[in-house]
Image (cartoon, rainbow, N blue to C red):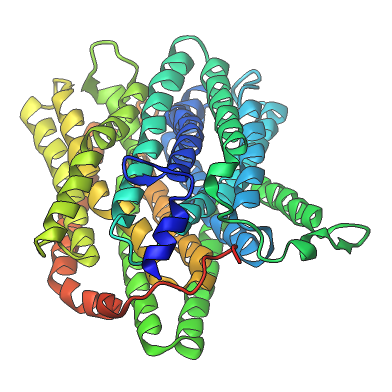
Length: 510
């Protein structure tokens, strides 16, 4: 059965040993990430320098926004699983994202101008909901190109992850440079053009996806409900979500409460489904997936300092030789583009020899490297002395350690979610994975807020305050990472890789 799937998946031919559809998804996601990370590189500076929010408030807004970006895949994943199919959901998400990024080009007069601020909040809301329809579902289509037992899967997700980070690198460099050098609207406008290119690539090369991600019941989408096609009603649900997110992103405390309630409900539902409706091995795999999901929360809470507190620290306390601080946001993505092929080769080579670390062990190693990165920056700041700017070398080093940690966790996590989940729960589990990222991102905003809360008025986050926070979270990360490595054999047993079998059909395809 696995062989027939592989042949079916390769029906349009292969490139570098993978179905050509993988590279359609690669380029579509590359341009989507170009737009998202181009905007992300500028956002904390836009909040502090243009809208004149304090460091503390900007950190919380940034955390709420990025958290919502990772909450909405639960909605997008559910609607795709139940009715829309992944391909239609990705297309709709790309349309919303394009509109949202173009709205970011309207910067108004700055300060606390209410009318301009409302356009800004609306732009963020479109980006949030658009990401919700696109993020989880495009990752699921990648998995649908391969059987669950295909040895190429981890390599495929790593190649896909390269596309993500190639776009992120280009977006951070170009949009960051344009935004800080020529004006905010130039940077955000470039991000909107990037998203439009991603939408075009996905639509034009649809045939190479070989029917993956199509609706399971097209007739249901065509039936009228309340006078309009049911499919269009689902798109209206997306617009209602935009209005809700427009309000939520302005009321960040509500986002924290929502995360707590929705997170507990989602975890309870997934576990209830696993216990009541799945056979023992599939149930255990869901338990293993939930362990990885919960472990990723700490990772993202610390990793996402990059766009907020670390971005501000680079701007204020690092000897950058005149290079715009936002440009350094590209380092993580550039490292991934350079190192992802090495990691893909490494996992495959170790796997052939039976030496590849398990997914839980990779998670632990990733968290340890994250902690080391913070401690390296703390040591570099101390060595430079309080009266001197921190050498830029240490910014390169913290991003290097954080990137190698990310490569041990994020693409491996994407692959594990798709492998461990039964086909009918694929998008829900992927959405839960992104929900954990939402929780981590909101926590990241609170941590970033703490780095600015004690700073002197008008001076931004004090260097010593930031370093004290970074030292504490660095040691916590190392401790947690070591603990995860120690218990990883127990989690690996729950994955039951020896009894993993391919499904009798691919989701969305007869």
